[in-house]
Amino acid sequence: MLYYLLMALSSLLSIPAIYLAVEERDLVKAVIFSAVQSTLYAFLYYLLMAPDIFLTYIPVGVGLYTALILILIKKTERYESD
Image (cartoon, rainbow, N blue to C red; front, side, top):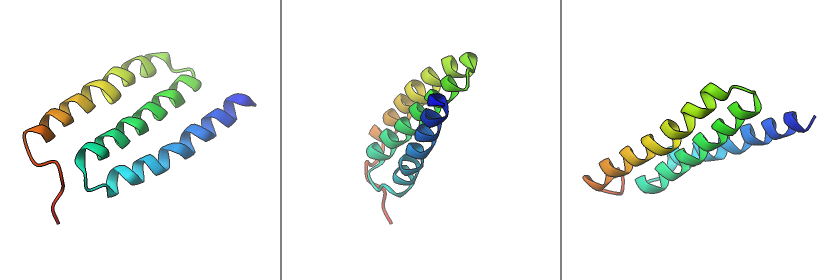
């Protein structure tokens, strides 16, 4: 029963993170919200007992993707224009 509650909580908490990542004008904050969403999805994969997906999603979805996007933002403008 606790697993189902944790899965529901992880799924529900990822929804505002996705919304904030899409609506945010500051690209660095948007990447941080995306990393939060990826972390919650990785936790969901862990609860679903998919260790292979979990162990690849953490370094790629949270680490590599976030670092690459932050490097690209550093080379451009930080704020999205209209």
